[in-house]
Length: 226
Image 1 (cartoon, rainbow, N blue to C red):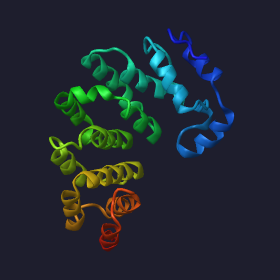
Image 2: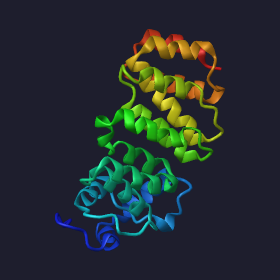
Image 3: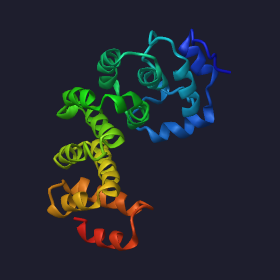
Image 4: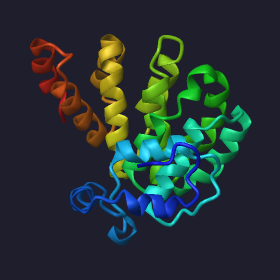
């Protein structure tokens, strides 16, 4: 059972909660991560550990430890400035989609600091690093597809030109979510041909996979594949 007060030895806690069958399954989902650095802790358990942390004074060696550093930023009682300082250390260490996406969804403090965080996010918007760019795209999808920020997000997403698979997949994912919120604007982007071929086709596929899009629209979208 996870100590609800403070995890004195984070690594020991992680190994105590290790699930070897889950490790074998999960390591296949995060290619590029050294499997020797994957302990095998299920996400709900990781989140519980993350909520129990009282500081971030622990190592970065294992996949789960990196994830916990991100969860600490989201869950701990910190000032906005403290969170940004910790993100400066965390974001450059992201090296897989799972850490990027799971931590992004945990940064709920952004909801109350959207203008300020958007300014912060600009430092990564034109990075040449795969997971910094993915971080931007997923953050925009998670927090900036409301009416006030929709056009800003769409303008950024439609102009991304990248050779990184996990960037292109994140952009397509974000655009497919944006399509559900504002069909006309995203459809206009798709029809314009401004997206790279890879992002365009990924976006069309993701929209067509959505249960929130009607069959007639899905049929039309077939014509927009390139």
